[in-house]
Image 1: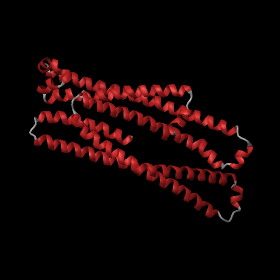
Image 2: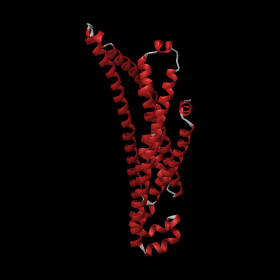
Image 3: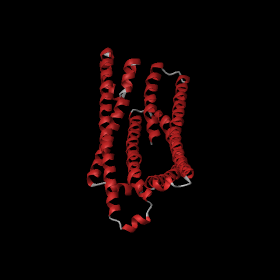
Image 4: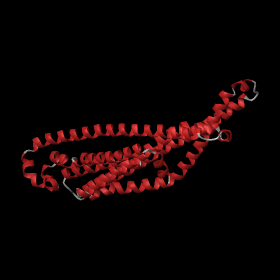
Length: 311
């Protein structure tokens, strides 16, 4: 329901831009997959050139690659640099495009709201709290863009990247990589389910406090003459401080909650990787192969944990 309402805010031009953003996210996820996937032949070429023949897409070239190992390392270093350079340049371009898109949406929604307000009867303004209207027009419009639409962009982007990582794990026959992804995904699900109701509750309280603060600010500066002759200035200041403290306390709770998933995910990811190291050493596997596998799994964890945290 919320997404349908948000979608109805957009103009046809904004909707077309949204589809372009989805396409850009798909390209970005492909670049992420390539940047992780190239690690396998890169580490194999450096640490265990004999294992190159076990990599499916390099199997036919294994003889040539072994004979030209020195030049191979140089080529992979160059490819590594180019891929990461292109990925980061493209990422900056995508973020710039998204920020302009969100800016356009905020301007559009603000214009629609003001137009709607000005078309109301005079009694509408007499019966409505002015602080509420000002809050909706200013801060809530900003929050719609910065906290809601921006979050939706992040959600779509990171889900596509995780799907790409999952595809890479399957295509490279590294199903053990799911040992990192699955427990992390399960923890994210549990955490989101647990904290979701609290976040909604805090959000509703924040809106009410923001409206009350806006109303109080307006009364203070519009009625400054009456305040000078008032005998209850201390009470007014205390009321302002109380509302401000309530609003800031909610922001503190929200900021702390944002730190919890990262800590949980990092500990889980590290535990899984360390457990996998112990498993590989216990079965007496080739050390070069251990390094190659761990580099791949470390990159999966390094890239997937931030994605899960953002989601």
